[in-house]
Image (cartoon, rainbow, N blue to C red; front, side, top):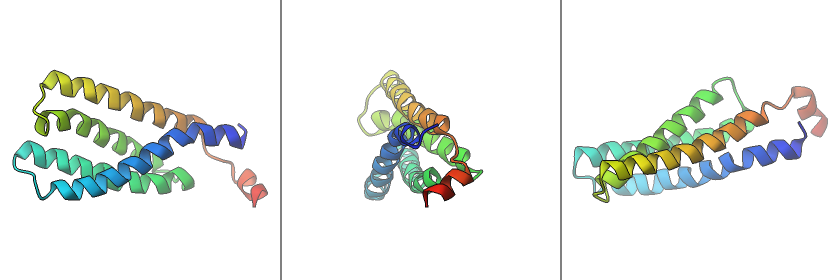
Length: 131
C-alpha cells in the first residue's frame, strides 16, 4: 500500500485521538470538581480513561507495537461508554438518547479504528528506505 494511502487511512484516527486526548484530560479533570452522583463519577472516569488511552494511542499510531490493537480497542470502548453515559448523567436525557449517542460515537470510533487497521504495519525495509 502506498505511504499516502496509509496516511489517509490513519488520519481520521489521529484526529480523533488528538481531540479526545485533549478533551479527556481537560474536561475530565475539570469534572472531578463537580461530580455529585455515582453516574457522574463513572462518566468522568471513562472520560479520563479515553484521555489517557488517547495519549497512549498517539504513540501506538506511530510505533504500532504488538499491543496497539488492545489500546485502541480500549479507547473505542471508553469513548463509546462516555457517549452513552454523558447525555444521561450530565444532561438528564433518556436512556434511549444515550443509546443513540453511543451508537453514533461507536460508528465514528470504529470507522477510525478500521482505517488504522486497514493501513497495516509499515514493513521495516520500507521504513529504513525513507530515512
